Image (cartoon, rainbow, N blue to C red; front, side):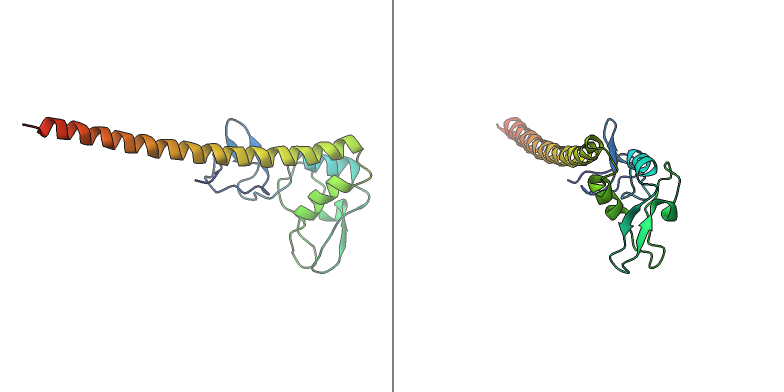
Length: 154
């Protein structure tokens, strides 16, 4: 079994933006790769006046003000020239930007790694629960078969 969002029931991959609130769920089910609210705020505060992403397809550089100014807007960032998704490039920028204090860069990186570990552990627990459920079903079937044979004896 795979880890699924509690709200939309879509499969969740480790590179998607999720929160963990009594179960894994997307921050935005319509755009699972969007930046988290915390990432938006860091961009807004620390990265407003410099390049935050370069589009690999058309080699255009973009500043925060060119891509959107709302720190609470839950959306992916698209290249204004070719429409390519820049969200992962912006996320990478947050872990390397010299304007962010080192402790915040580290926390952004750690938060991402922790969420990926939680998703992996959730997947492992789900897999283990699936195995245990199948074992219980097999044991119950065997018990029922034993009961049936015992009742059918002369």
